[in-house]
Every structure is written in structure tokens, then in C-alpha cells.
Image 1 (cartoon, rainbow, N blue to C red):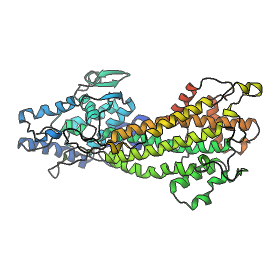
Image 2: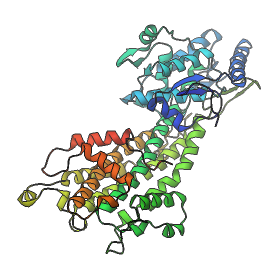
Image 3: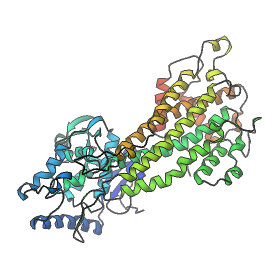
Image 4: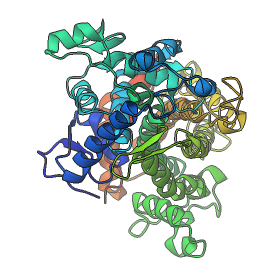
Length: 519
């Protein structure tokens, strides 16, 4: 990957490949963005603009520049109206509905669109590229509705809110308020741009929304995989599990690398080599014994999911492609989001399986028929108080509900292609719907993980209080995590509302509070 000489915490667009982490850093680390000073990049942008101007002077026939859009491509636009065409594109697509993407998602969408346009094959001007940079760096973020994209011709409707922002006609998040972009520009000393021919299409006719969401989903999914691995180790400790289930020799004979890595992590968490926990049971239930096989599917999928997402991120994905250096206008279908749809449909299956796994673990932890001596519902109440206290009973019911909803959403969105726009867009990707589904499944899964994490910690603390686990036998990483969680999670003895505790734990998961299995 190209390593820029720009100041630390700054991303350079227009030279070399960007990573998922680069896009996520725009919100996680408030990374600033800039355009490359690479000579070849500048040549591509300059010659793309010059080539389009030349074609217009010669009254060349260019889709979306001298013609209408989509099914209207047979409609020739008079040269006197060519300049107005991109403005109409931004306006008639202003029909998005549903909830709005968050400020963080909006920033990632801006950065992802900038990544595509910075490939230098979209025929856009420096004015447009520079204003996108300013939007990211000054946090002038378009208010973008979630619903309305079928994933081809790209994310037209949601990206119209980016295009409309650039010309001063749409609402933005700015300094904690929602204001018109023209007002935000005025306060920042910026000016709206006038879209050149092709620029409305260049902004809107691409996969930036689904790809930005995929970057966010990958980041959260990768962390969820590690957290579920740690939760499995904690659940095994709480259940007096058999650490031999994660033996390295055992896993060497089924050599899926991600699965092997998950088993290795659990084995180390359980301190297996120094304090092997050889339960009187030969075999634990599948939700413990087979956890590496469940989590390992996601771990082994992450490399190819990354490849698909990052290839899309580093692509020119609008139409037509403008090769200014070679002077070609190439009409195609790079706006089609099939690879992101496949990645998200696949990832959401893997993520939902984490929810299902955690749900089975908490169900085991609360059930005296299966939890090997832990109190009913993990209540730490003692003496006669145990008769009226219910511990994690309702939380486990909640896990069942959240898991069911996550599993329900795993139906692949990509198979629901619909013919649209007078049968011009007669096969579409549904990539944005798949990405939104994946993020919702992640949200539900993080809820289940939060609950199961707290339950496993409760179980271990009860074992420590009862003298069944020696704290000194635990690894430093496990001890540190137990101590950190105990700092905000008071042992559940007397029944109390736990919704705020759960929300706090979920926020810690989403902010990736715990450093897990760092290389």
C-alpha cells in the first residue's frame, strides 16, 4: 500500500490503495483528508476535464452529458441546456425516505465517494474534489436518508444528497445542528460549486453508500469475532468447561486457519498449558466445544470480505468512465454493487451465527440443569433472598428476542433484484439494503454479546466468591478484563433494572473498549 508523506493522522487520496481502516479512521480518529500531489493523478484529472470540454465543443454524444439519464438515454439534450442537466439529476432524486444515516456514516460516505472520484476516471473538476475534501475536514455532513437505493445505477438517491449539498441545496449536519449547506459554507468561507456536465452523474452514479457501510460493518464484525472468542473463554471458565476442547493438536487436523486461530486464542485465555481445566465431563455442549468452528467461519471469511470491499473502495464505479489520457468514453456498468451485496449478505450470516452462539451460551449459564453448580439465573442473592431474586432471567429472554430478529434478517438481499426505471435497470444488486441489514444484525448481535459477556463475568465472580476459581490461575488479560467490567458492573444480587448497564456495555463494544488479541 502507498504510504503518504503527509502529516500523521492525514489520509491522501489519489495515489495508492486505501484500506477499510483508512475510511473508518475518518470517524474513529478524526483523520483529515487531502488530495495527492502525484503528477500522474493530476494529469488524469486535468485531461479528463479537458477531454470532456473538447467533446462538448465538438457536440459529442455522451450518456448523461448530452443525453437524458437511464431509460431517457435516447433523449438528446440541446447544448444550451447541458449545463442544467446535472442540477435536475440531483433534484429529482431527492426522494429518499426512512431514517437518516448517522453523522459518522455520512462522513464515511463522503470519504468513500472521494476515493472513487480520485481514481481519475470520472471527468470531475478540482473544484468538486476540493470541496469534498473540505466537507470531510470541516465536518459539513449531508443529511442522507437510508432508503431508496437498489444498488444500481449505484446509490443514486442517497448520493443525490451529497451532490445537492455541494451546490448548496440540501441540509447538512454542522456544529451540532441541521442547517442548509449554503449556510454552512458561508460560515466556513466556502462557496457552493456549479456542477459541470457529467459531475452530477459522477457523484451519484456509484457505490459509495454501500461501500462505506461495508467498511463500517467489517470493522465492527472483526471486533465482534474477537469479542465472541473472549466471551467463549469466559463462559467456559464460568461453566467449569474442559479446556482440552481447544487443544492445538486437535485443531491441527482440521486446518482452517481462522478456526485454528480462534481455538488458539481461547486456549491461551484459559491458561491451558499452565492450568489445564480437565472437567469431569469428556465433552462440553456444542456452544462451548464448537465455538471455534462457528467463530472460525467469520474469521476465515474476513480476508476475502476485505478483498471485495477494498477492491470496490479503490475502484472508479460511475458511468461512463472517462479516460482523459487515452481520450475514451467507456459506457459500462461499474455502478453495479454486486460484490458489496455478496460481501454483506455473507457477512450478515456469519454475524448472526455469533448472536446465536452467544444466545446458546447465556441460556446454558442461567439454567441449573446445564450450568454445573451455578445458581439459578446466575442470581448472586444468598440465603432466603434467593427465593425472590431472578438475576439474568429477563436478560436471557431478551437475548432470545434479539437473536431471533438477527436470524430473521439473514435472508440475502441480493436475490431480491427488482426491475426498475422502465426496465433499463432490469437487474440490480440491492447492495445497500444488504449493507443496512448487516449493520442491523451487528447491532442486534452486539446486544446479545453484551448480555452474554455480563453473564459470563457474573458466573466467574460467583465461582471466585465460592472458592471454585483461583484468581491467580487466570491469565493477566482475563483478570484485567474482569476487573475492568467489575468497575462498572456491580454483582447482580438484588434485582434491579439493567437496561442502562446493557446500553453502557453495548457502547463499550461499539467503541471497542477492550483491546483483544493484539498481535
